[in-house]
Image (cartoon, rainbow over all chains, first blue to last red):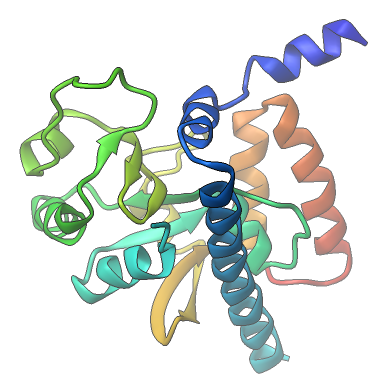
Length: 54
Length: 160
């Protein structure tokens, strides 16, 4: 188990974690909500593309 | 203030040639995984580097994770001298990639991408097959989980 975790830890984006830690909790939540907005827009765009192709 | 839609909008408005890869591309193909940044493979020609520098300058990009105070000038010269940039901006994190594992340059991915309408503007995203190939080439443990999900999506007959 520890070896598997160590393998995963090798690829953790520490710069992203540092960036998150520099934010307040409120800023982290707002950032997450913004990211979800972007994700939802790409999800919608992909769905529209697939439906148009069908 | 995080505002990734504005960041993407600025790239699109400036006519920057880029292709979305990574977790956001997976989401476009139906992935249910969560991601926290946007990964873009950008064209390396001089015109595009100039467009990229102009588009992102208002967002004051800095190298993510770099020590505070480390000088960093985001312009065409820096873009030409480097290749892959993990950036923080005033509107959120973005990774600009000149090349990713698996021959993932803009030119090589262009024919393996689709155009979506994102926030009312065209935006290129790698195909599902290309995304799987890129993740296979990267081969990190976390990619293996993503590949399993993406191949399951392909099993559902989702976008190629």
